[in-house]
Image 1 (tube, rainbow, N blue to C red):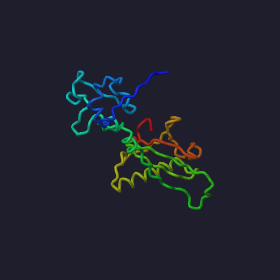
Image 2: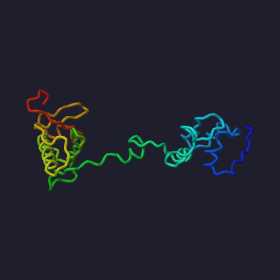
Image 3: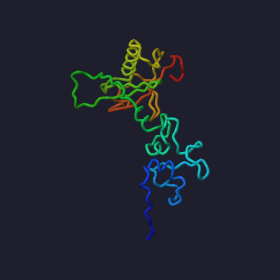
Image 4: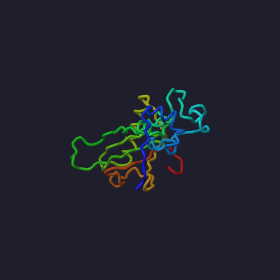
Amino acid sequence: GVAMRVVDRTALPFERWLADVAYHDDELTGGGDRLLPSGGRVLRAGPAGARPGARAGGLGATRSGKSEAARLRTGDCGVRGASAPAAAAANSEVPPEEVQLLAVDRDSAEPCARILIRLEGGERVAFCMEPDCNVGDLVAALQNWMDRAKSSGEDCAMREPRKLVLRSAFPRQTYHDHAVTLRSAGFVPSATLFASSCTPCAAQC
């Protein structure tokens, strides 16, 4: 077994003990580091006997008036950026606008093509279309959506493209033939495409 001994430090509030006493408490291994929550540790920048906060990195009160010990326990590291979990949650993607172009009298049991298109500026729009529509119909629907966004004053990276080109990332393919149906192109039940603009005379278009 392991010999254990109770060390009574209840005479002081925990925060005060951690900030003012723990760093020179010889009866506790590591100056009380093991009592901190997971991910925190006691910071000691000065020599033994120096009060925390007297030098940078100590456990004294910060400019905001909040002690380092309290910040460690609450997870407040003073970092404000997109990498923080809360910021990541706040910046999660907003669902794209969905444009329904299905026939009114269609059989609801029949599959449709739901194509999510990502534009060069990061905008996203999803089109729900009949499988027998072709790529040209999809391009025209996208152009109409962009024209509507332009007239409403919304920010769209490709407001006046000379020609729209649709590409898939995997398998990597550019859809030049606008007569191909969405079913034949493999867009049923769903697909994700990338739209870009180019001049009509560009070789890659």
